[in-house]
Amino acid sequence: MAKNKLAIYKKKRDLTKTPEPGINQRRKKASHTFVIQLHKARRLHYDFRLEIDGVLVSWAIPKGFSTIHNEKHLAIRTEDHPLAYANFEGVIPKGQYGGGTVLIWDKGKYKPFMDEKRYIMPMKRALDQGALKFTLNGKKLKGSFAMVRTSKGSSKEQWILFKLRDEFSNDRRNTLNVKSNSFSVKSGRSLKEITDDETHERSRS
Ligand code: MN
Image (cartoon, rainbow, N blue to C red; front, side, top):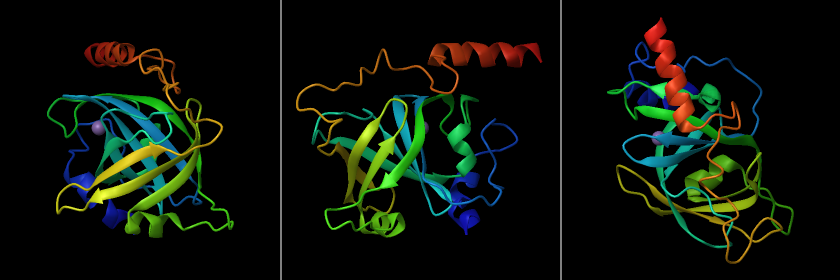
């Protein structure tokens, strides 16, 4: 199943030329992993990925997340990624799709949102219907968010992302200071440090 969903991922990359993970993933017990990768490509953006049915369903979010209740940020759906991508941090060579430096900005588990009647909608169905709600438990980000699909063009689906009201939301101030928060939760490194490290490694070998 997951292999078909990853056909576009594979097609977009030459896996002999990029350090990004391949698509032959081991069957593992379904879990609810999420990852947010800060990606310095032509434009700096965040890639948000949610594990749903054996793949990482993905969106590019130019402005990233906000803790301000109801502040809407654009999210552009991108191709599903293999589960192993949640651990990927490094430098994608120029000329490979999405080339540039990738930093694991946040990572953790999420819970599908439960409504007042204690109903939990299956994530796959919510995705197909274009309305997701989930609660993140990351190192930087916590609390509930919603995503709503606003256009379903043949190429790129557009969604909006916004914070739901809870103990982690606020009305005026985004408590995520993007600048001071731009270190990796995996390695503690900045984008520049990752770029420098990997470039040195390559020139040494
Ligand atoms: Mn990206």
